[in-house]
Image (cartoon, rainbow, N blue to C red; front, top):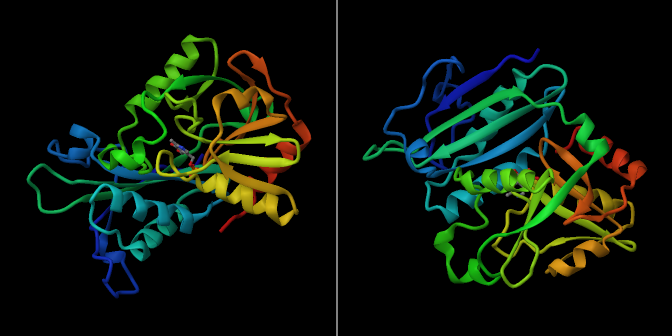
Length: 294
Ligand code: PLP
């Protein structure tokens, strides 16, 4: 059993030159209270996070997660994170993960109401067992996101493209998908363009081409999707980012939801239409995703 671990971080400025950040970390009991009741992350969901997959103590794609943390901070007007400090905290948390799969969460919140500084912390926990879903797959339904595909450019205050702590809508979408007899959802725009799943990116295979919705500000740029595209390209396979109209979904020859902890879940059905499951390819894909990746 992997031990649970939590570290409160005293955020350093991005130009802090020190090589050793140990004195900015305070290990806390993950089962004991650690945050103030004035914390804006809990009051308003005002903050950002990253979930990093860990396999046998190796934190996967750390740089990509740190880059996205910095990108989310910029969108949310949060102080620029010191990425070397977060890298060191991630390494400490990874050292507390045992064999098997774990998840490290990096969290940066606006801080305490009227307080002087943001609050930052990191946790490590055993990951849920996703072995079955990686083989058996998921049935998905499309759900309206409630805005058109041009909104991200028109309304940056919606913080689309940032991985914010405000996941209540995403969780509600998964519950709605379950009410409709499916396992997961794919968000679509009011003008019929595919976005992403509530906690994963979408990859489709059409003929010999692997495609994913263009991350043009409305969706998160998934670290797993980036890694999968690099792996596909290494094998000489064709990849593409583009706007995908909703009515193209049933034409997919195969499809996956990909994310850092669940990894690749093959999609077996979209809005009731069956999608072929390529078991051999999916097994190879998950084998790759479980191998050490930097
Ligand atoms: N899109 C959303 C909304 C997500 O929440 C996530 C992951 O949690 C992803 C995409 C996939 O991102 P990643 O592959 O970096 O985990």
